[in-house]
Image (cartoon, rainbow, N blue to C red; front, side):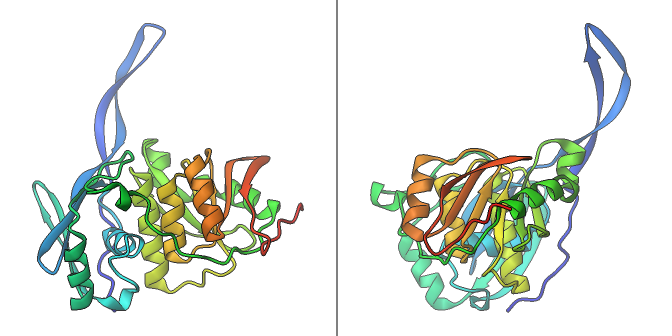
Length: 275
């Protein structure tokens, strides 16, 4: 497995602004903006994807993207990872197993990422909805979900500074946040979390992922691909996300706000305790 290089990079930038209210403007003040830069993912010398992302935790992002997209089955198949910065953006070079590289070439996909949604580069309708792995949903209490929401803001420094980032958190069975990753893109934040969990080999059997976005098909699919059995979103789920959760056995909750949340899908194997 690769060693972990420097994780953090500057993900925010100061800018001078004038605040206006009721037709009046204050003196010039300093504000902080979230950075988003092009990040190219290059496998064995071949560029595969360019995503707009926050330039921090890029090793976790590259690993998480590789795992959630099925490029890698586990982190041991990534032999090396290096990050290079240029004026145009950043490039993450991954050296992966030759068999995985051969399979990647066969997919003939060229993705151009962005902070919104899309299936960029998908060549046929059959590729749009990929088979989703089965997962084992944990028991999850209402109290655990609510505790994670109470802790959420204190774990989001980029969001607190800029108001322009998403968060993806890993929470234990009691709802305590163990790890949180931030990015301007919701998919990117979840990929960063998946990469961090895989790199740190954290046990996934009893916890759940919490995301500061809606629960889309892709968010459910990424969780299932990583072996995460429960996903809680602060916004709504889409119909396809619920369908995919039912197919995989993933526990799916949404509209998670202080004092309330909705359970879209609860497998029979998982219990929800009302306490």
